[in-house]
Image (cartoon, rainbow, N blue to C red; front, side, top):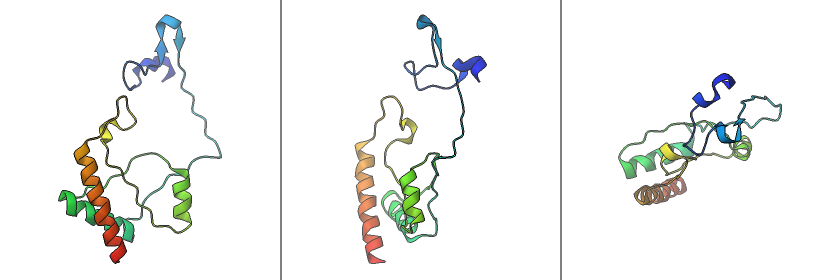
Length: 125
């Protein structure tokens, strides 16, 4: 990868791996550390996930759960301590952490309706 660092995908013209005018070229290094961040997987049979899935179906008509790569170290610690965790977001995944990240107000309105239905469902359980 370092032989052709500019072939790596970037997030637009201001996110580059080489700066020819400055005669600077980035270098990719991978170092594995023993103090790594552990990922998390939600339990699909848990009350929290089942309630959230039902809330999404109630508001949107269908639910298409998916997973993304990433880690939230403290969240995994909470799950290990016995908490039922379901992680969500209502922004545009296509621009998540990208240049000019944005969301749609309509998605936030749906998100609030989903959370309200979710809270009621869990409270009734």
